[in-house]
Image (cartoon, rainbow, N blue to C red):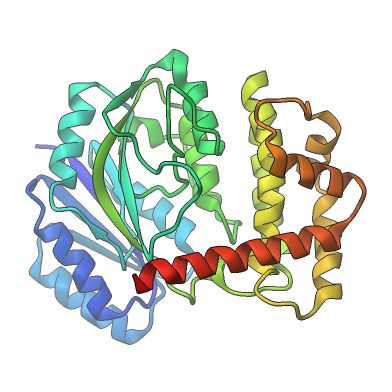
Length: 350
C-alpha cells in the first residue's frame, strides 16, 4: 500500500539535541502512515554519525548522505526520493504539533484541496503588522486564487484575511501539485518565496485552518539575520525570478506586486544593512545598485500612486526613491528596525 505522507527534512550540521527534539515531534504524531526522508547535505562526521544511528532504529526513515549543495538542492532530492501522496517539509531544528499530520490529511481529503495551510508559530515571535492566521477554516476556490496570491505578497483581504507566510513548512501539499515544481538551486535567499509562488500558480483549491501546526526556531546565526555588505548581490537572483513571475499575473496581482516592491527594497536594507551605522558608503552604493533593478524600476514607473495597495509608508519610499534619496531611506529603516527590536525585547521580558 502506498505511503500517505512523505516528510522531507534537509540536515546540515544540526546539533543533535535540536534534531532529536524535531524527530521526537514526528514520532509523537497521532497519525502513523508516513515516511521520513532525511537528506544529509554534506554534514560533518558527528552529524552523520547520529543520523545513521537514528535511521538504523527507525524503519520509517530513508537517509541519504549527499555532498553539500544547499537546502534547495536537498529538498529537490528529497522530493525525488519520496513516494507519499502528500508532502510535508520540516526544517531540522523546528517542531511540529502532534496532531499536524492527522488534521492535515483529514482536511486535504475532506475538501479535495491541493494545499492546506496551518499556523506557523515563531520563536522568538515576530510580527508583520497583519494577522498570522485565520480565526476559522477558509476554503479558497479556483476563482479566488488571486486573493490568496495578494495575501501571500503581503496584502490580506476579505477573502483571505492574513498574510500567507513564505515558508514551505506548516502546510501539506498534494504531491501532484509539486510534480513540475522545483526549488531554484542558485538562490542564496528567499528560495522558499519563489517555490510557494510557483505553487500558487498550480493550485485549484486551498484551505487555511486556524490550527498551530509548526514551531519555527529563529537564531541569530541564520544567514538571513546576519550582516552582509553584499546582500543585494545575493538577493538579486530572487528579485529576478520574483519579477519574472509577477509579469505573468493578473493586473490586480501585478499592481500588488509593484506596491510590495517598496517593502522588498526596505527589507533589503533591513536584512543586510540596518544593523548598525558602519560602512555607510558601501551600504548606500548597494542601495543605489538595488534601486536600478528592473523590479524596482517597473514599480517606480508603473505603480498607480493612488492604488489601495499604496499606504503612506510605501508612498514615502516611492518619492524618496524617485528622488534618489538613499540616505533618508536608510535612516528611516535603521530606526524602524531598532524600534521593532526594542518592542520585541520588551515582550520577551514581560
